[in-house]
Length: 419
Image (cartoon, rainbow, N blue to C red):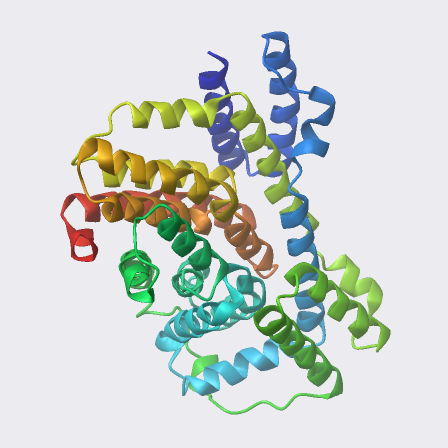
């Protein structure tokens, strides 16, 4: 009963916030506190005094804080604006291909080893370009994240490394790279199709205005902008080639810029989007309470009880999506579901690769949700002119739409070409 009630509370918080425009993080924290008291009274093992301290997403909090701090500096001293104009120049003034440029750029950088968290560097620029050129912010968010996540499952990026190693350890694929390519190919196909759909459905061919895109010319950088651009490059190089924590290196670079006088310190600190940070972290606390109360397990068990030969792959997509929305895909979901897939393949007598494709697509697809680190950073990176509460809700719906699309693709047999 408590498990079902926790899910009802989660839905109610999302609906209430959407209707009243109140910060969902604030509402979620209040709901998490009150519901945890009720759950404890009903016998659930939950420490009410540690609901926040134990469930506050410290890593996500620091990454969003550090990266928005750095790019807040870039916006204040004009670096983001100049970079935006030069990217438009690269597109030869054609605003229609700007999302495609960011998709490809994100895919290449992520696949080179940066992984999904490189969204913290690419997304602020992409969304600024979107706002300046009348491009749908939601569309640019989805297409840019789509490219980054396609690359994020490469055998050089952390998600891809984990997926490949677990599949090898459970005898699902061989140790050669060729064995892993079908898994990566299936996910890349799903995410690319979703990005293409987002591009066309959300107005990729019809930007609202073209003034900035119609005057392509290179914009020079002044001293402070050059320092800021160098700081961004240091972050990219540090993350891709030296495995540095993106939050720490971003904060360090922002601190150096302040010490060098590249921006006004008070304005830079004031520019940190605290309302967005509360939104992301507050909802994460509520989700953790729902998880502790058995809400996610209730949904997962219900799906497992109806699994069969034809439904195995789509159900694992949904299950991977549900679990991936509330816990680490690399640290929890894939290590849990990929071994389970090996067992199910023997029980059901079907291809283990087919089931694992379901796990990988579902688990890694929901990262576009603002409940995940990547989606949360995307919301945090949005310019001040963007309604972030609206974008938050839109990305939630987009994550659900991705899973629905993937399930449909599974039922019509698209993923059969991969195994």
